[in-house]
Amino acid sequence: MNQLKLTRKKFFVINVVISLFVIVPFLPVNASTIFLPSIQEEHIHFVAFDSSPREQFSNNVSLESIKCSDGLQIIMKKSNGMPACVKPTTYAILIERGWGIHVLPDYTSEDNNSEIFTTGQYKVKANSVNYFEKANGYLVQPDDDGNFPGIIMIHEFWGLNENIKDMAEMLASHGYVVLAVDLYDGQVAATSDEARQLMGSFEQQQYTDNMNSAVAYLEENFEPQLIGSIGWCFGGGQSLRLALNNEDMDATVIYYGQLVTDKEELSKISWPVLGIFAALDQGIPPEKVKEFESSLDELEIQNEIHIYPDVNHAFANPSGDRYAPEAAKDAWEKTLAFFDANL
Image (cartoon, rainbow, N blue to C red; front, side):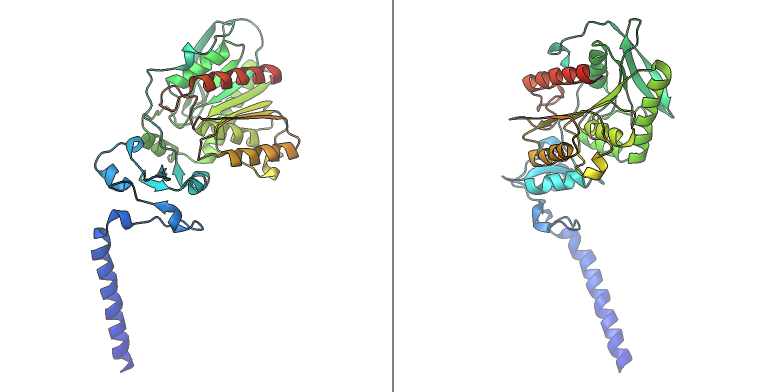
């Protein structure tokens, strides 16, 4: 009798499992949610206007054009590129934990910052150099005799594209040997999804080893007395990572990059830090920036932190519709003054 009951239970479980496999694929997409440990499910939604982000995406709506309901913001899941609409309070958590990444307008090489930035006093020369395994960086230096400070420049999540090369030339004209690193082994993205795939192809340790090799390359070939770093977006976070993993640095510039606020980690830094951030950035919100600034202050690390009002993440990139020329120009002038004072 007991054996018969056990057989019936097994039969019931099998029927339930089969039913789930049959029913779940036909559930409305609007009813689906994402499971993320320690984050309440009601904060993450696949609900947007007349159709969900997933439905819009499947109908060939570009990521940056997907519409969310009022009060929600589009984010892209890092593992598979699927769009989701989330509450602002959740957006920063998902970015920080590496679950999601920003959705930005597709990159175009038609625009650059050369029209609004002032060129320095030096003519420059540039060439490609192999400094780490398969990585070829863009090296720009003053076409002049003399010893110049070195700067490691770190690209956005697009990769080492023309905009970053233009910025390397612009910075070098002010009297610096600039090595724009390539963290993607020569690959460049044109869309947020392509950038997501490239980011997922490498581990953080590879990025760190790459940047440390770039520092060593400058030290061995140019013997600069001082070395700084600068990066935007993904590269801004990597600029901070470099500071936490290389004691030879002398100045760090972060443009709206992912932050570390742990004081034990930040205590590794013993040089000035410049931070450029956007008030409308929900991935790196002002509250997080202020927490970062507070940690630096408590550790007595010299810092300049600027949060620009009415601008969003990537406001200094001329290739997208978030570009804010006046804020970008002011931030660049602050960057030049910072490097001039500390390198």
